[in-house]
Length: 315
Image 1: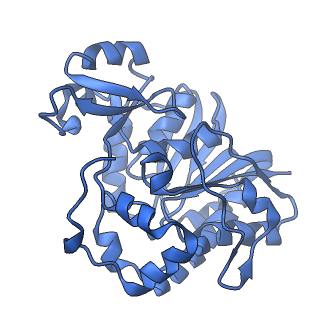
Image 2: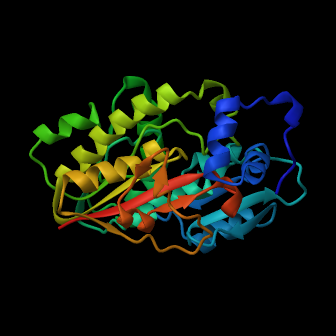
Image 3: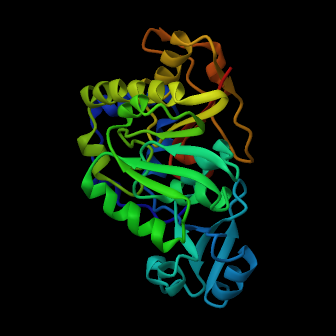
């Protein structure tokens, strides 16, 4: 694991410590959350093959394969003199996307195919959207949606930089899609969340965390997952994901959908990585047994961010 951030400068809230001590190994979680995050990239195969990019970079950069993503690599400067991977010309040209290793998981689980109709409900800044587009080989229709003008800017820039030509950008609340009448083969709901899995790159998460925020977010998340599910064709696939580690934002949201819709079926997430058991019971709430099929990874499991991913089929 990388160098630690000086812990005396960081103060976790007592309620946060109490809560997360019930959910995981607190020492392992806190130590990993206060260590530097390895840089990782995803090769954009819309513009360049994996081998071509490796040849361009390997003179000055060491690349280590990410086990669960064939286009993904951890990257470190050969002489450890640089960390500014985003300043490389290959990044500017869209040959790769600077993307955290765990963030690559939801599009892999979604498995989009060429010529399908796919919706990314909360698309900005475009890391998962561009990944979906490359799996679709720019064929079919990809609707990339977000809900503020500010979030449109990075999304549109990244889609252009990566050579995505099958995407339509929309600006609306995700819940409004139910009025569209469009049926999708696949929907990604990478929901707005408290981000407690991303402390390693955003220490402010520690300070802004509070249970009321988690409760409010879970209401929005339930609206989004229900909207996404209702937009699916029969036998369509919904992937719900967050970079939160809160049960209310993850297992609780999926449990809400399963209880409301008999035709919502959870499928097992099968990827080559270390995982932790999904939470089936927390603070006097019991969740559906199917939820054990969800993917929950803590930062200490794979030395990444923390992430939650559920794959749901509409029967």
